[in-house]
Length: 154
Image 1: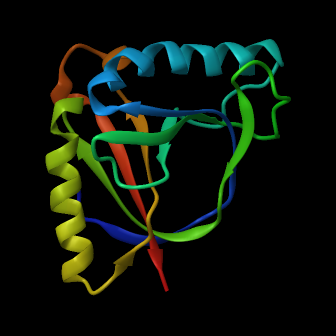
Image 2: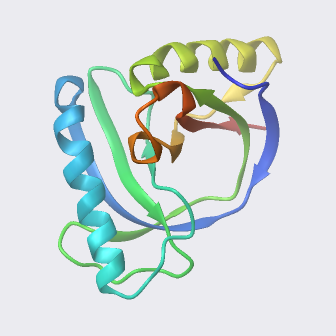
């Protein structure tokens, strides 16, 4: 389900983002329109994404998701509508890749978090998921890839 996790130093990364705070039940309704809005704002400014889109969660998702829908960019974007410039901080992270449909992400995170704890690491409050390959890459969810990133304390 997940690749062997690694501990890596993640560099700072500029983002174009929309911050949302929504109930878990509404997540599917806000993701598609949110990423389209961010991508349109980036394109309108003549900026090409610096990688696949991602979500940056400020705390582990529970009944309320407090997160940003982001696109990594090489330079800061100008604020436009709900889209704001942002940045993922440079930090040490535990990282793995989950292979499968989005409905399996909760289980993948559980397996990943168990590995982090077993290795003696302390997770920070935030985390991010980078959607490297999804429905746009083909209809077979077993070929989809989501990079899981858990910043670490210490």
